[in-house]
Length: 147
Image 1 (cartoon, rainbow, N blue to C red):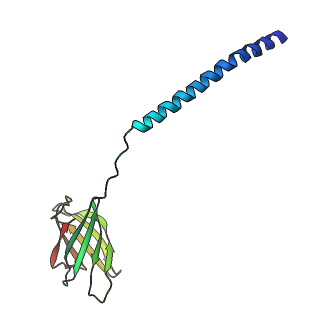
Image 2 (cartoon, rainbow, N blue to C red):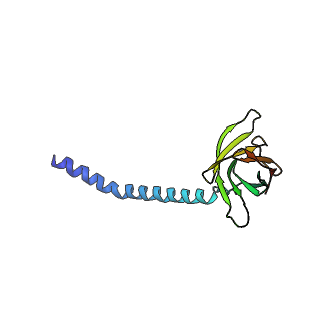
Image 3 (cartoon, one colour):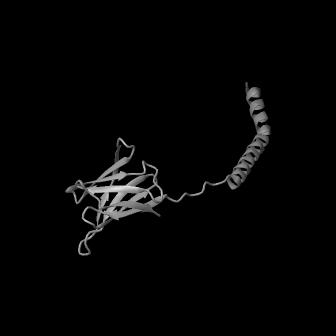
């Protein structure tokens, strides 16, 4: 039994340097390949957010700006008289009407409903129009979208 144990450890001891050199070679090759592929794999380009502003006049003739970012209308800013600060209504997508036009809803000073209808049917681009109402008082002038 003693001879078996001695032979086993003796053979392992003689193979140990070979095993270590195989391990080191494998680690060096793996590191080299990872370094090379990291250098040559193209990185994706960062895309700028697609954003448009749609300007119009609300029901009482004050200017408003609807903001469109990456496929959704996100807010409407109502610029009231110069003595009052602007009111910003955050919008959430609601539904599509019978004409295929997306409808967004928000609030005005927590007291009135804001409704925005995307008249482009979801294909918003420069020149598209939106219609905005505050408490069912529809805009005097539709918002025209531009960059």
